[in-house]
Image (cartoon, rainbow, N blue to C red; front, side, top):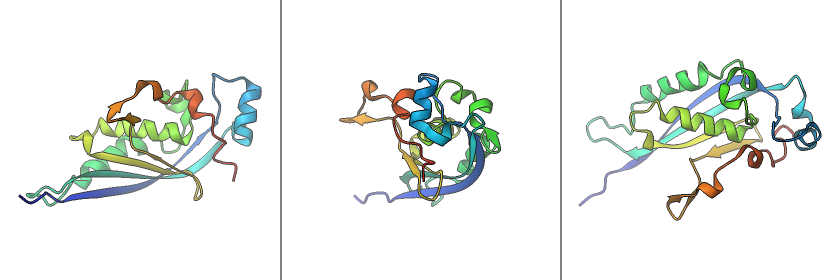
Amino acid sequence: MSQQPVAFLTRRETFSACHRLHSPQLSDAENLAIFGKCNNFNGHGHNYTVELTVRGPIDQRTGMVLNITELKDAIETVIMKRLDHKNLDKDVEYFAKIPSTTENLAVYIWDNIRTHLKKPELLYEVKIYETPKNIVTYRGPYQLNGLYNAMNKRTPRDSCTNISSDSD
């Protein structure tokens, strides 16, 4: 019995958005100490590049893992309409109570893209280039021995403990 070939399909898109790295769970002094210049009250902007990768068997009838138009439409809805030329903290409800770090942005994109795919299980990876030097890769919730580990679920405070990605 031969195995069905598996392929990875990636679609890249760019968008611009501004934000302020600030956690409501931290004091102003803690926010400034952790995020430095990226905690500027007026925020700052990025030209993000996002790569969305799906992984799955190549359909014998169509020769595709996923119709690229389906992925393109999901990206248009989730990224271009909701995030492009927006203030992430003020225009995207998801970031009202959690810091708009690139890690949290990747989680937001992952969760929302999946709702627009006929087969959400095909989504393999969200990769965001915040700058040429700072890249976040997200592949879904943390797994321990194949089971979701709620104790290791990402929280806003955990996401803020890294140094600002704009420090370079």
